[in-house]
Image (tube, rainbow, N blue to C red):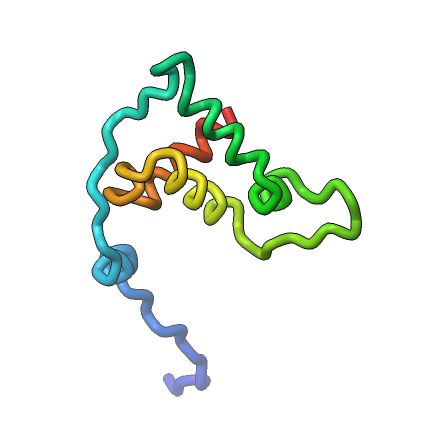
Length: 107
């Protein structure tokens, strides 16, 4: 039988996830964050940081059509907030802390 000239797609690598993870640095897991400690001091700090204009515009949108946004993503804002309110955990694992802060803020 003669080949009809069908093109075959290239094979996908079997370990695509393993190849992507090779270049990434592993971050250590974070301990539990005690949000309720000291009468919820961390929660109040989180709320205060969410009210900062640069953070508020990204997280909640513009109130006035003349306001400019910073161009940051929400996760970048949560990472910045995490660095402000819990700097010691931010130094350990900034991405994991950003996810925890986002989870608490959207709770």
